[in-house]
Image 1 (tube, one colour):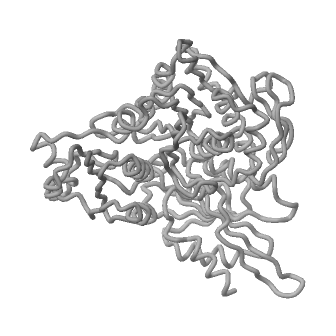
Image 2 (image 1 turned 135 degrees about the horizontal axis):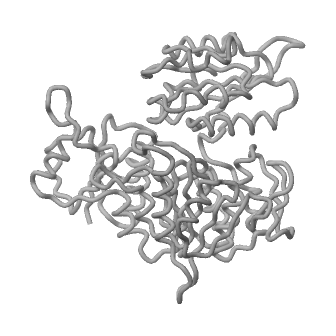
Image 3 (image 1 turned 135 degrees about the vertical axis):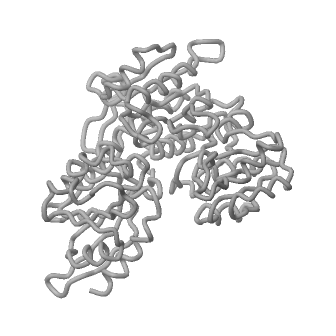
Length: 470
């Protein structure tokens, strides 16, 4: 089959392209300003990429067009379509489908799908689960919204029965407004957490809970092929409401004191308890209670596929995290003689206020007394651009000694939102201004955490270069 993917450089669609190519399909694709790193990865796989969405791409004559949710029926200011290729497909009556639908029909059929859902931690938990299953010899397939360092790739078919997929609640396509995850039909579903996000497509938390309930509806009960399992964070009232709406599957909880899977100890060195009994020990380099909870979710999911919690915990001790999850981008020595020391620059994907807070909390709890955190961030997600959660920013940054906010592209006043932080916060729409300010403020022992769900203008390299010159 020849598939042509519209919006191929997105993390999900790029992963889908890699899976399709590995499965033997001919794959081509297009995107606006075809960009790395996904463009480099796809070209290395022999996938032809076209820049833009020109209508003449229908002349490629694929068997089907796979449409990413970046594509819409939007018009430019001059009245012309923003995506002329989509208009040509519709006008000619050519076959098209969404990425999740194609994945469901051509990759996930017959697999034991492990779907990792939640507002936060999907990528990390999916990577953890894949690694645990790999260490158990199950050779899982996976599609993760990032690059797990243990694997070095974001997607593979795998030769085993299990397939782990990051199950996103964002909508599927302009013609299918259901959440992506309703297409995946998991036998094991992890509900990691749930709070309000994606204000551009959801009116309120109840609307997102409804989509999670639709996911719950697709998980099997007990049958001839084994039971379905829902792994749920027992600390989340929103998820309790989701299950109260209706649940037909085996449920295993984690996190809560009376849960099936719990942890005792610090976030980087803890005992795993299964039904209150010691079942394994995790000692690793990750920080934060959120990662401890992610670990419990992965252990509970893997146990459904026959992996003992002790073996899962041992595997997690060798887990190397995911790129852009508190990834150290470099260290620079600053100061002289007795004042000399290093400044460490991190890259993190956090963009929701809760994710920002948990990221900084985890780092704070791992640092010696006296070492500072400088947070450099941009409110870049659709939700943050709308200003829906701007009032939560000071709360999210409580553990930062200083904060530097890149405000370009915002329709709301970031300086006003961060006013409660007083002189601990600096706001500018010029990235170079923020880099210079963070450089001036930095001193030996500092940790600079750059947080964005985009490329952030290469701020990490700019900071490291600037720090080298002080």
